[in-house]
Amino acid sequence: MNRRSLTATVVLAALTLTGCAAAAPEEDPATPPSPAVEQPQEPPTPAPEPAPSAPAWPESAVAPECEDLLSLDWVTTNLDDRVGGPDIETSTEPYWIIGPAAQEAYDASLFLTGCSWGIYQTDGTFHVHVMATAPEVQAPLTDALAASDAYLDRDDGYVSSDGTKAMVYSRDVTYGIGMGYAHAFHSGYWVIASGPLLRPDRAAEVANMALAAMVDGA
Image 1 (cartoon, rainbow, N blue to C red):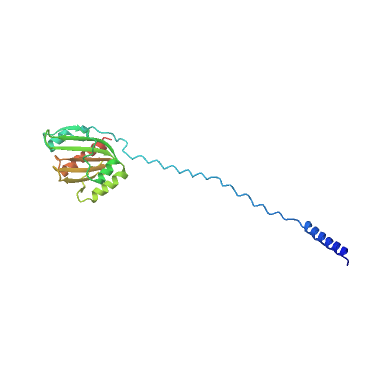
Image 2: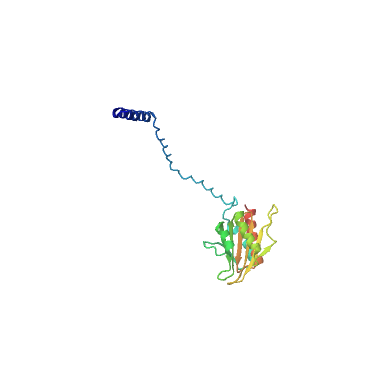
């Protein structure tokens, strides 16, 4: 084969290879999908807290007149004929509250009135304070009083017309000038009777009478 024929053969082979290569389809690289755009998430709206239920006060929980709580005739006959009163107390400090359980219950109760009786210019005084309270407030207090060694859990509580007996607890407070002290509970009312003119039995009796005036007069 001469040089011219060899050259033609090489050129022809090159064209043949080039043509084959050109005929092969080119594969386009796959286009990657666009990443999803995440929308900002709004924080969930918190559920509203339920409104606290109103305390279950007695419907007739109003401040009573001091004269209606205790008869002065009974006071002068059974305690001392020199006793005068009653006077409405104006103090906003609950000095008559003894102990943390009573303080906690008082803070969650409704104060109605405070009344005082006494012998002029002496320490011979006593006081009656009336609160309205709810069962869930009263229960921890009465449990604490019943468990306390300082209090007598009495069985001579006032009995209402429906046969329900008041819960009454009394004690002798020996510090200071000393005094009788009693709690009484019935129908959502809480009465505290206290003072140097009272001994524990008398304090319980006074608390029962004031409680009866509240419940029977409702």
